[in-house]
Every structure is written in C-alpha cells, then in structure tokens.
Image 1 (cartoon, rainbow, N blue to C red):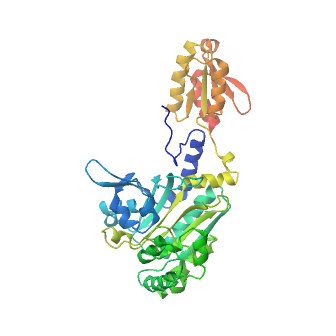
Image 2 (image 1 turned 180 degrees about the vertical axis):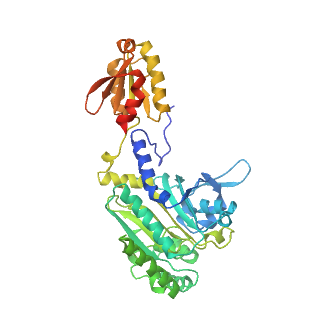
Image 3 (image 1 turned 90 degrees about the horizontal axis):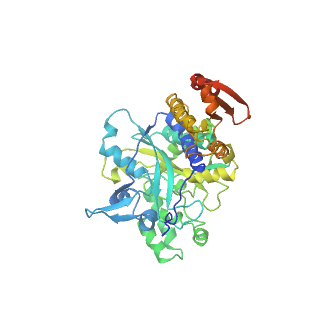
Length: 420
C-alpha cells in the first residue's frame, strides 16, 4: 500500500522548503524589530473556543472545522485560525496583567479548514500572524498594517493592494444591522442564506457567489452608519497610513469572514492569484476577549498566508531570487582515510559556525561532486590520499571553478574569511 498526503494538504520539500522558510522569516522581520514576542499555541483547542470566538454563524465554524471527540470525551478542534488561540493564551496566563500594554505577540503555524481544495486554497495552510492586545489606539492599527505592508515589500511583492474599511462598534452597529436586515429580507435568497440574515447579516455580504453579489448591489454600507467616534477613529487610521506612505483603497463592502471584527478591517489582495486573491488580512477585535470569558481587552491583529505569499511571488517571478543553499561548504572524500579525516573537518567547520555537509555512502568523485552542486554550497573541500600525506586539502570555488591548496590546519580560518 502506498500512502499519500490527505487531499487538500501538501508537503514542502527541498529546495522549495528552504525558500518557503526564507519567505516566512522575511515576512515577520519587521514585526520582530517592532518588539513583538513569539507565541506558540496548541494545534488543537476546545471546540467552544472557536464557536464563541470565531462565531457560530461563520462558514469556518458551520462548514470548515475539523472537530473530533478525544479519548476523554471532550470536543476538540484543529485550529482554523490563530487569533482566538492567542487571546485564550493571553487570558490563561494573565499576560495583560504582567506588564505594559499592549501585549505584542507574533506566531507562525499551520491552520486547518475543510474547504474545496484548489490552488491557493488548501485544507492545511501556513500563516504568520501578529496581534497587539490591550490598547484602543488608531496608531496601533496603523502600525500593524504598516508591518504587514513592509513584510510584503521585503519579499519583493509589488502587486499587492491594501483594502480598508470600518465595521463600526457596539454603539453604531445595531442601527446598521437593522438597516441591513431590512434590506436583505426583501431579497430573493435561498433558505440557508435567509437563515444567516437572522444570525449575522454581515456574513451575507461576504457571500462570494456572483448571483448573490448582484442582488447585494444596493445594500446599506457600514461606513454610512458609523457613529462620530468610529468615524474619527477610521479617519485617523487613514491619515496615519497616508503619512506613513502606505497606499490603500477604501472598500466599503469589505467584510472579514470572522465575527469578532470591530472598527478597522483590512485585507491584502494580489492580482496574480485569480479567485483566491487574498494574501492576508485582519482588523480590530475589541470584543473577542469578553466573548470567550475574559475582561475587556481591545485588540488588533492580522494573519498573512505564507503559501499564498509564495504563490504571489511565483506570479511575479521572484522565486529565482531566493537562495536554495543548504550549506556553504561540501566535503568530497577520496578514499577511506580521507573520509575519516574529512568527517572530523566538517564537524570542525560546523563548530565554528560554518554550515557544512559531505558525501556519504562511499560515492565516487563524480557522484560526490554532483552532490556538492545540488547542495548549493559555494565551496567544495576535496581530500585524497596525496592531500592527506601533504596535510592539505583542495579548496574549490564552485562559482568560479578556481581551486587552491590549503593546509588542513588553516581550512577553518580560510573558509571563514572567504565566506565573510
């Protein structure tokens, strides 16, 4: 029997896996410079965390979660998104009481949703995220949007568009909700969609079906129902982004797919991904902490799709610029005595901070040199019986083809100098 990865999942393999790691690290580089600390949460959580946090009316909860009963009879769900888990962890460990607010955190990990598998939409996908918890400040919203924008710029993407909207808050959203429900009830919609109107009408606006979108053309917009406080907040976010030089497009129809968003909502889209255009997004979620049993903790954050970003980079022809180098130095031994000595030398290089590998399995020189080329190493160390007698090794620059003899006692020092 031959096993394969489950439908809608994928394996990252070298050299692509080296590139995807580089993308992930680059996306969060600006976040780390801004003082965000790393958090890691379990891959699975109590199902009620997502029901209460993400929203029982969302497609994520009603259709897409991987939920099962564990051996203790508890309902467990593989995490479909990262924010609810981060807020749960902050509350459980009382981080909001441990020091200065906001609590700034970033994460990286796999999420799981049972979706129709297609390119750019997987059932297992990788995200990086950043969250700032415990402060209601438009500058914090602008900071996080800027950090995401800088992440996309750092990987070289030029065709990303930032969409921006405000969803209002608990003071002004009820009036908007009432106007929206009144409008939606008059439309000819299927039974499931009509049921959604009564639970959370904003979810109807997020329906991607073209026939439904056509009927929604004249729907009331959240920005037309904002209270004065939300208007002022939104205008300050817009002004700060303009001052920072972050271009954005106002999208009054933008509705994020999770129930916890309030006020600022944003999405990053790329024109090279077809229907699955989103490469990331987020917003403010001031009521999420209270929804899952915690105190008031106004917060804002985002998640960026690493695999989606990778596809966007592919669309822009940027992947060739990513290094696939596994090691800097590759050893090629000729003979058993040389193999023993080179094995020790490779270890010396690693101890000195130089990434190194060598040919294993008794390969001949031709096969070993092929291994050196495939490794992406810049230098090869070729050691034969004559070299051992001379207490030297042949150092070959795999970029230029130049080859020089270097005393064994000086190899580490010489290579460190060349690599610097």
